[in-house]
Length: 488
Ligand code: BG6
Image (cartoon, rainbow, N blue to C red; front, side, top):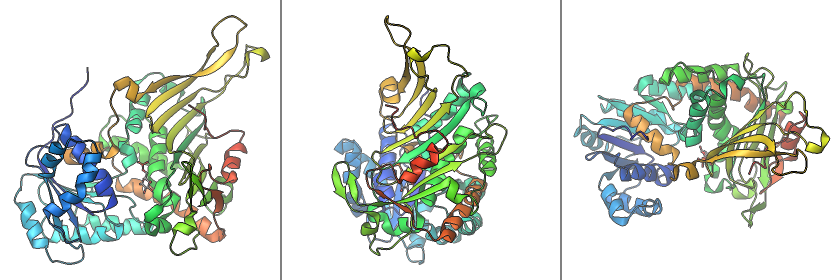
């Protein structure tokens, strides 16, 4: 039996940065999908905010093609757009805020969600105005898109300023990786089955790999990306959150703080990487011209208007968690732009059997691997050793128990934002980052960034369309292991 989705109260969702890439490509299509599933109650309002001088119709027109592409019939697109409006506002000027406040106040009973999909430099101004125009009333919530700052100090400034207007319980720091189906499935897999938890420790797990590979380059996001780099853009948030979900102790329940307390303990147990060991445990790369999906593509520096940059577009790291469960188990993490394929995967590699009874003719005994595929082709594979069928001696093979979610459930997977947006409306912060988590993640990331800056070295070049610099291969091979690139 499948559980039906929980009902949602009528709400107002205000998207600051409403004309931006994230809003148009992700947030509005996600809301549209929820609308198609009947989860946007009648009377709910979605309001885009940006500086552009648009009216409701102009804004709707700018969304239409993205919504049609998201798979809706024209009539449904129009019905949905009937719930969408627009207000031109500048976070740094008062003009228009009175009338915006009046519009929001028309529905005092509605849950109010203010989604800040803008550059983090504007978070403080927006929250201050939301406060001074009396918009933090009743059931109001604020959603902060990553990145929250660019280091611990700037994250603290943002969190302090937001905290002067909204309580922590009203603040939803989004990390869309936590909304991906496979990540939530990790909870189900680990804590809904008796099989894994007894083996989920240094006694039985050899190492863990987390890869988030993208084929795209930075394209038009260069201005943002060049100030961020792969460590701030992907590792400090998405990849550390995945690591926490793999490594945390079983929470006593799924209540938000039970889960977040456990994740925080993992972040606080990460072994520091600083000037003393960064060269040993980290590899930075930057792509040069090469190929992506059969096409020639420019290098990172050519894409940047300015030309010169030490920003990393690739990073590989060997992380360790210093606690009883994980002592001595490396977590190899890597992410990069312009890699050969778009794939995000968590691979848990179990220890080899202590002794082979099969003899040399049976072939080598591979280690069991549990592969959680986040995208594309979401699913779980458990690689096992079995006997090759038929006579001819006992020959062994390594094959996966393979569960593709699309095949098993016959539905395409919802985008992460669909789940998370409705969690905000329902007021469920379990899959959002608490302030102390963000701080602990920066506490770990800051010394790495400082070590790189102090070294003065440029990132290692890699050709677009390859798996990063060869040093990233050496990082894991030095330990007698290899990156898992053949788990098809
Ligand atoms: C974003 C990063 O948070 O995640 C982008 O800023 C990255 O640089 C994106 O491309 C990847 O998300 P997804 O869901 O496509 O894997």
